[in-house]
Length: 468
Image 1 (tube, helix red, strand yellow):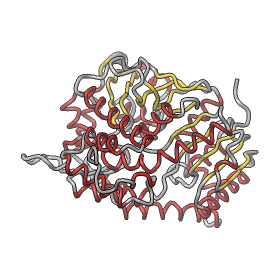
Image 2 (cartoon, helix red, strand yellow):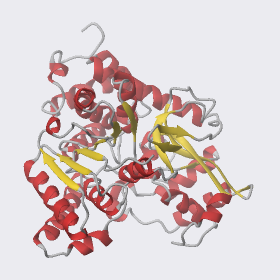
Image 3 (cartoon, helix red, strand yellow):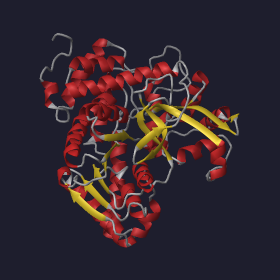
Image 4 (cartoon, helix red, strand yellow):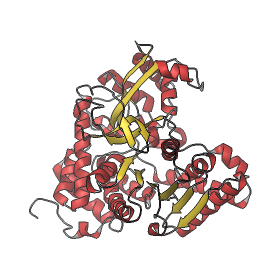
């Protein structure tokens, strides 16, 4: 039975990669636009701008959506049906520090928010706040679905499951947003033309199976009418690699992605589904080889370019608020977001499948049942149910295990405040090479990010060696 008037609370509404589209979907969807959208952000100026935009969009579209806004999450959590966590305090600055300092120790990161020192230290900054939110949710709206939208998605998602087990939760990443990702692979397989929709009939004939840890997912099989089309997908990627650009306005995360995607297919026989991040999970493009590689080492995350991108996005919001851009343009410029798309599906009982980060169960039989994976799920108000995928092939399975252990150790280190576990997480991490470098890197990052990590991490600054 469909829920009437759900309350969706967004903690971190100032997240530009989510907040603007969430407003669009809450207004656009008949399953959501008679409910409540509660916006929470710790920055009063950003919150005021998003609240103003939301109220203007609601009024322009004549819907009954109620808008609440608060600097304090506890003021609006009560009666929430969904709580989306999407905050990241000064993330551009700190990802820049993570990347620049790590590069001194031979670790190159093009994104720096999921694996490597960047992923570990982002968890140090964000996960304690996530668990604080979980305690408030348990007190004020214990029946709400908690949706983590903060990287590292696997670390934070598995931590919510393990350390706040009484809550209903799953984690998301928009890199595999359905139905767009399936249409993309249908295009690469030659099932549909460029920008052609994937209609229901061809969608049913196209069996696409993707699985893995978030940002380290792989197309394990792709068939159309029973015919293997994975080689066709790989060939399309190879052809595109021949005309690849320098990454355009998406920068380091986009450079050489097609060439790397095809190279990984050549080596492992499967297509990486999220190359912009997957290339950072592997040591192959760290620049440590003796023989020159046709694909150069990873470019580093560009802090200033990302600041400029954020300024442009806020400028767009200000143009809507001032009336320079009409709200009618807002409704055509934006579209559904992954999280609110799933919320609409859950509330409306629409029966659409989505990629969700959750426990494996039996979807990938040769990975542990409690492995936290990104899987295609049927999802309703009872939560996500992963669809069968099949075994992870040898080689890729070993790499998945390393990444899962790194994430598990990271979550445990953050929760316990144990520097030995923190060091162990980074030594297991696929990007580190030296014990001494790892220990020095930990100390330098802790000092550089002193204001952003819990203060107990500075109780023993100077050494993380066992017994110190």
